Length: 367
Image (cartoon, rainbow, N blue to C red; front, side, top):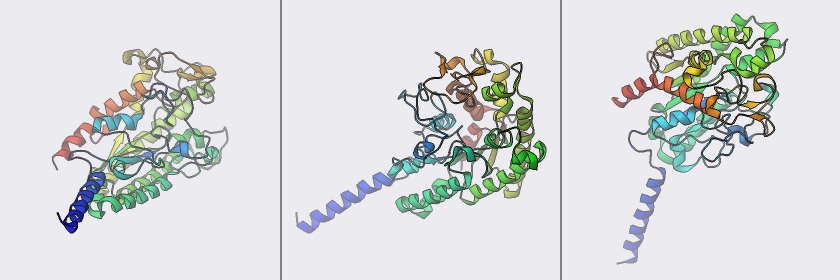
């Protein structure tokens, strides 16, 4: 065999190897992108100098590695469980050095604990990735993927992806209600503040659409007055705290209406409102029905309802996390997350408007 022919064969083999490294996911696989706060952060804050962290035990105690990952959970969080439904590995944090090459094509998690819809939410946590910075990272991500597979394939990957965005809770608990008197409380009534948040959320969703997102799950807030942190701070008798709970009751219907209006403006059901408040109300109001012994006391924490401070190695820790609806003062346990994701998959329009994730997947598989 001549030297030139040997060289040609070598070049072809190297090219085939490179194609296999950067090839798009197998047919039927779907990229997944995540934006938002600590409910969906897979570990971005591990790479930041911030107070909003979940990188020490006992976080991650029920994760496969039994080690903290930066997820605000005892195990898997909502994005992990959705990824499992998609038949894909969990999306890596965007700041992870492991997010490169073919792993970029799985998607990315841009979420950062502590952020809100508003830029002044979470300032007490110092360095966090605010939502418009997350969207900037999404643009950079697309540039990186374009270098791998080209502009046309990148657009196809992004347009065909599933997107999850979770915002709003911190704007209330870590902004409006953060202290008895705050700038936002002086500026707005609760109703007006909620409307302001919705108007700003619409701008964020519009920008996501401009960046290529075409199937976006948009979660509302959970029942803010019923989380252990609010019970510890504001409840006298174990009942849900009135003001934060009213905030959720105002915000979530406004979110559904905004999603309806935005889809009408676009002319397509791009955005899906996820009623996480009602999903959680089900097991908060009837914990035993869902296999929990309590929906008031966090598994990990201290003080009344284990709702004060953060979960640390020195905290009180329950022996069986599956018996608790809340893992820490603010975040559902892995088992509660599974209940939420099951409803995202198959819930009626009372929970998923205008359609659930199973319907979305079935519709998109035919296009």
